[in-house]
Amino acid sequence: MKKLLEGSRAIAEAVKLCRPQIVAAYPITPQTHIIENLAQMVADGDLAAEFINAESEFAAASIVLGAVAGGSRAFTATASQGLLLMTEVLYNIAGMRLPVVMVCANRAVSAPINIFSDHQDSMTMRDAGWIQLYVESNQEAVDSIIQAYRIAEVCELPVMVCVDGFFLTHTFEPVEIPEQTQVDDFLPPFHFERTLNPSNPFTLGGGSEPDNYLEIRAQQQAALIDAVNVIQAIGADYAKLTGRAYELVDSYFAEQADTVLVVLGSTMGAVREVIDSLREQGQSVGVLRLRCFRPLPAQALVEYLSAAKRIIVIEKAFSAGAGGIVAAEVRAVLQQVGVLIPIDSYIGGLGGRDLKLTIIEDVFHQSSLAKSTADGVFLDLKQPGTATKQE
Amino acid sequence: MGTVKDKTNATTDADVQEIRFHGRGGQGAVSAAALLALAAYEKGYQAQAFPKFGSERRGAPVEAYVRISNQPIRAHNQVYTPNIVVIQDSTLLKSEPVLQGLKANGLIVLNSAHQPSQPEEIENEYRWICLPASQIAETHLGRPLPNTVLLGALAAVTDWDILPGLAQAIENHLAKKGKRITEKNIEALHRGYESALQQGRADSRKEIAP
Image (cartoon, rainbow over all chains, first blue to last red; front, side, top):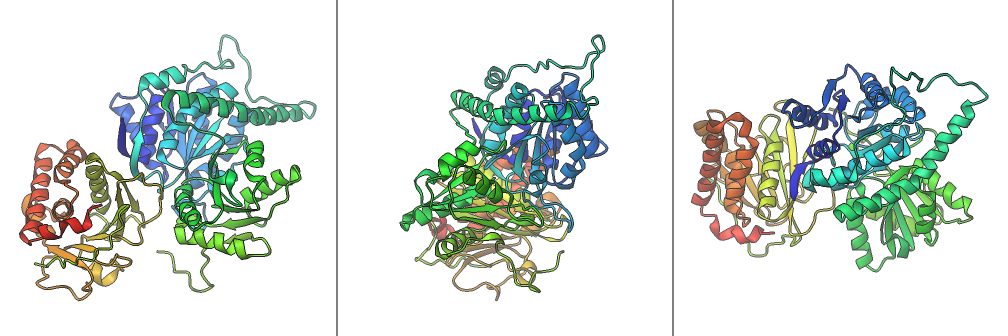
């Protein structure tokens, strides 16, 4: 049954349905409501898990690393500086090929300090070896968390479900929470082949040498590339269970449009509105949302974008000193197959700045007129001296 | 008491009704938005509620938004052109742009004890209703929390038929605070509803139906 729930509550319900045995976290806005809900469920006896209120995000990540290595299903969530503080452990989790699932409640990074949403935190972790799924709605957050456990456990790779802070975590919207029996049918009990066991001792993440480190890293890369197929197969299986289908990318008129916008996350809702309005005006425009950013779904990008005449990437993060991260990767993927389409790179929505429908529509009109392409242009930028002071 | 100025040329968007709550930290704007969305959803509408979080300080200006529609709500943007603004503290009229973007013929629900005539900030193109929600709350709850009173007023001046849904949402929301507090808040809700009705607003209700 559909219920109107706060995003964080819906996320906690989804985590509970996956029967984690260990939940470890350190509170940080805008992740806090997620773990408050989980802590309450444990305290009320509704979730048979141990809740560990860690002393830092570094500790929280270390606890879920140990929990999964010890054979327990685990969950953590964080955001922003908390994710950055986890960095070393996140690489370790991926390197040890531990199926940890976490939620990143996407938030800007300091300095200046800003509690609002953008994608700089999780984008900064794109090379850590985690699968990354960026969701549009709280329904997709719920569904993606449930899928994430199965993806993680099949691939022996960690999965980060990226949920826009506030825009999703603090929004009440209708969400269908699956039945426990449905999730139990979909997600078998956790069984980890390489569980640490004192009666049969071995090492996870032990020392390696120049003669084998490279091979281990290559295996990790191969596993991530192969995960594309697993994510697709599990998405299709989930659709059989719930009727809700999820792919690597989410197209809204992308395959039949001259101009295709590319976005990630909750911005997609606003872009859908803009696409409807532009199409009513006779414009040939669509949008492609990257649901899965790691592994990069190169083949799907080629499929959906090759026929376009112009591509406009709008992203909520950037590589400082370079430019748009997603734009650079889309360019590389298309160039690799010999497709040379003008690609505009826009950066916007940083630190919670609302990507209004009018801004998105303006970007489309600007791009359709421009002879050259935008290269990491900041959207909605105020003129120097007009930015208001922070509170 | 104020008057709701009713105009026949309502320009309400058929697809979605947007409501913006303005309050001060501690007054419960965020909870009010959630309760309204829950009641509307219960009534069969699509609904969305979310806060604009600033510095989370008691007394600081706070905004929260609600969308109510017959269609699924896709955008997660803030509300810029509301059909209704609910102002929990009338001093915000002076200090914050609380009426910014309010649609023509939009509705203002204002909490104020001392508003014998139309406040100068409220232009003629708007309909408005004013009630001493803090005083009503003080009487019923023992604390000047205007939330449930204003929600009752909103139920009276809209065509959403959400009074029972609001009572249910309040009951669920306050379940852990005990029966007495729940009952008093529901009393306050009904007092707000009656107070708005006494101002003769029933005739304007259809104008703001989704």
